[in-house]
Image 1 (cartoon, rainbow, N blue to C red):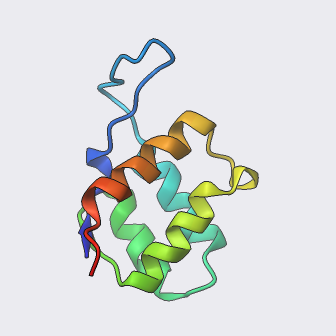
Image 2: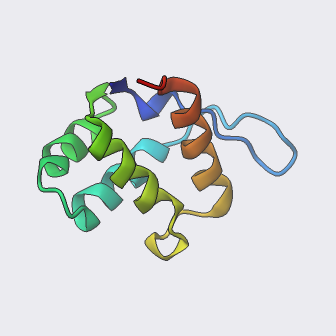
Length: 93
């Protein structure tokens, strides 16, 4: 599955789209520093550059878990934006 988190829609509290954000860099940093699967390190580097990345189902599952955990530092609206993006982009197999 190919995803490009730089395309995720981030909205502020007034429901306005934040046009310039680096959410993909924040998520890439979490993957780079917290992932259990070492395959995700190279994916995190590419994601940090804003590239589309190919992720296996197990990678997506780990990404979801890391993003959903508030202990990893993403604010709630950012976590929601990433999870909503994944729900929209990832088609059931």
